[in-house]
Image 1: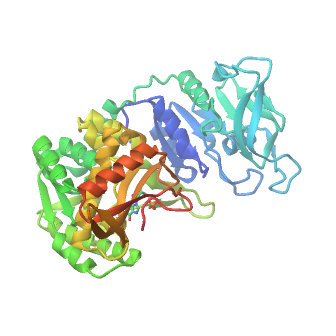
Image 2: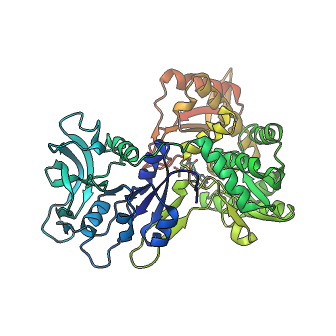
Length: 524
Ligand code: XMP
């Protein structure tokens, strides 16, 4: 637990959007931690010593027996408390108000889902400074129950047609309660409420990337002591930033292993190895295992079989090299905050599911290694900011995502070396085109897939019979949904001509205009 910054505690009651609260607070340079309600005991609260507390939303109904509660001590710490949706209702109930079940949960009140408009009450509330610029503010509601009677000391500061207690507060004790979700995109001015809340609580906004870097380095040193750490490098942003950060903390106690499976893009292995060896002087094993991977992939064309072979070999190969690092007790992973999904179950304890990093999944258990995960608290864009803070080249930080199985899943059908060579060349021309036209940073991911089909063409006086390829470029926020990038016809035409002229083996170029869903970003 970090002790050098003012801390805000988010008590999670299982809302789908609790992480977004943390996101909004990070944007305000406020240090916060999310903890499931079951873990928040009196002892925990006293040790954590929050400067403010936020009670999240959640799927339960406070009128149901056994529904989650925070410790009563939360309201006796003398710090500001903000209750959101379920958090608002639990606060009201515990402080002497009354909550009724809505239609959804079988009671007689009004459930409300989706867009709503909140209008101000007559009196001003500092939490709402700069908020009601218009007569009403759009907010996002998602509740079955509603507050029927306010707790003593609370007054109304905002109402919506279906939520007479949309915004209430006990201004003496600095308790604030909102029925809607200020953290979501559909409450467009919601960030302002958080800004006002942390200002009222006295946060100075001292949680910057520079501060994070110092804190993370201290934590790594404490965790690792004089033991050795191994880190699987993929050349992607996350593992690279993790490696540079850990190297700054423990220097030569870190060894990186870069597994080259022969399915990388043109010059990729050399670039990654050069960057780490030349710029950072980080001990790096370059494991060229092309023969082994391509050998086992020979003759395979089923997408899932390809993935399974690559995943299994990856673990075997990584283990082989890691075994050579004497005294290694830790494995570094680039796990990010969204990978750490803390969901709340109402019968048992908190269920924590961690998506393992694809490159080294399953390794820690097999090798008896402990994990070092210095990016666990960061969102993707914060990892990029940390990378900049650590001095990684901008070109590296802005790289498009690249899948663990590499070009194997961009080569539908059988994988052969000649096809991989053609694919690498075509991909390089395509990416060069995108960069030349200044489009690289507007696109989330772009690549070429070589198709398992040959077509007839004509070049010069001769007939050709070569491969067709598909260009793919998508925009996306998180890779979960995506849309194809609307290149101009001029761009597409110029790129097709360049690929056919510069890449022997390809005589037809197509552009993939499928969105996700229904398609996926990769072809396999
Ligand atoms: P799809 O194709 O599922 O891809 O729309 C979403 C994002 O994930 C990447 N991807 C992978 N990354 N191992 C990885 O590490 C994989 O097996 C894998 N499959 C897809 C893909 O490049 C895109 O960014």
